[in-house]
Picture 1 (spheres, rainbow, N blue to C red):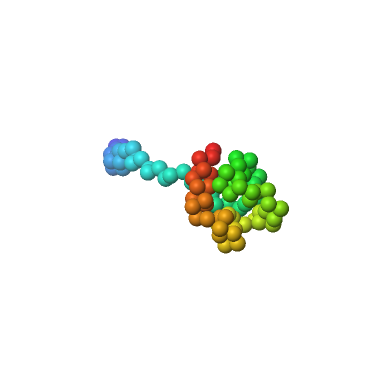
Picture 2 (picture 1 turned 60 degrees about the vertical axis):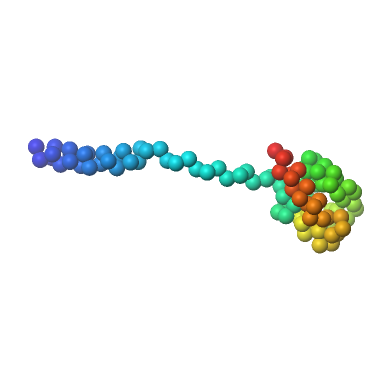
Length: 105
């Protein structure tokens, strides 16, 4: 008899905890999706290897991807290249490239 009483008491004590645990969790706030590529974080080599990303660069900085020296910059980012070509790689152009890159899937 005592064993049954102890088991019943333990089961009754566990019910409130189980009921609390069964409550649905608040929905997590979805973070905005991180773009696949960015001018500040993605190296130029990766952008050149993706035909869509390369086309975006060509659109905003014509001639850059066909420059014979571009292969030497494959490990750099477009943002880093800005230091060497500030007239061609402007903040405005980088912002437009980032906006187009954000639309790539």
